[in-house]
Length: 90
Image 1 (spheres, one colour):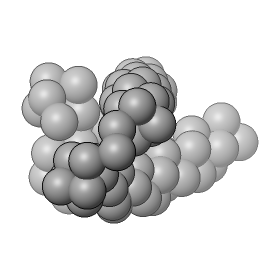
Image 2 (cartoon, helix red, strand yellow):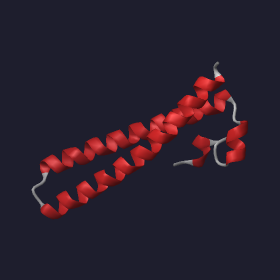
Image 3 (cartoon, rainbow, N blue to C red):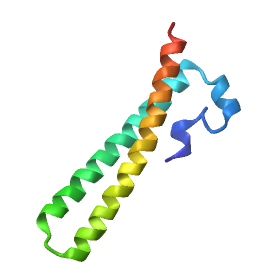
């Protein structure tokens, strides 16, 4: 994750002072990262469909597993940022 995309959220102190605009930009960055992972997963699934090599299949499945873990972390961030925006817009 590129640190400049999450500016304002690098420490708890920064996060407590982040503006709605910073929160919106951070949420946009998370969505962009999730989209990038989606494209990567799609590519890996297409590679899985084209191969019969057990070693390659194992490697591709390992990569997919790690992407799912990364996605899970990003979804938690996304949820927190969305909640913060809802609170900030009240």
